[in-house]
Length: 105
Image (cartoon, rainbow, N blue to C red; front, top):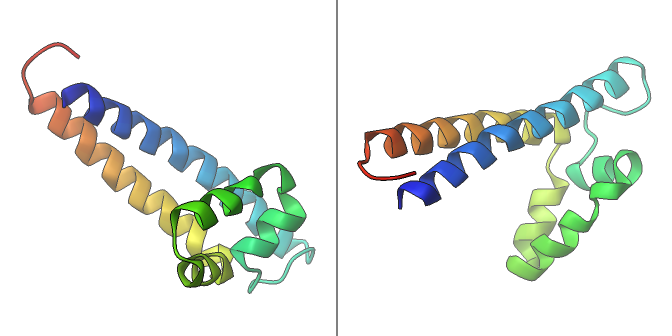
């Protein structure tokens, strides 16, 4: 269990860095008038980060269609910063919990 928590913790923290870069790119695009503030997650990934658009297919495989439509329709300026916050909290919790456990990593 400790190893699992360590993996979750580090993946969450590293993932939050990538989400932060995505949010930062979007902020630059908005500031330079290359994207509207209301740009959706779907449009941001499709138009500005097409190499990541495969994530939508994975979401469609894992989750019901209405949820995927809702999730990818959210404003990207809200979604990605929220992901950073949640990932940091989850990662810190997992690493702290793993640190309190005994045994090999």
